[in-house]
Image (cartoon, rainbow, N blue to C red):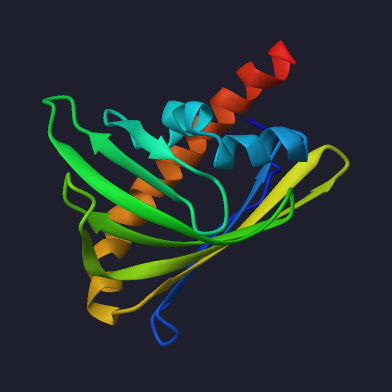
Length: 166
């Protein structure tokens, strides 16, 4: 990994929002695909030793991704994401909530806003995550920051592999 790449993780409890900025040493189309295609998401979007498994995904406005994070002993933690806005290669927004195996959401959830930009072959992703409940945010924040950091490290490794293939 290029250690000069920016990584910032800020929690604003007053705003009930987490802000993440992360740079990747890869071109924008590849990074965009890594966040928007199930077959790539499933390769990085769970902190090891867990793995991600998408049951179905429709990356369209109003579409959904329903997936599980699966622990080594087979425990499944389901999540439901509903895409609320998509501007190709620039921005997408989704509503995220935990769910049961039948896709019934566990509310409250969170609103995610992803912004993508590229400069000199480095792609910057800015993510803001607004939590509907401060309690939910506080419950998630500690483990979430560790888990999300691990997931982004997974993505770094995967982007190197995918860049070499293209």
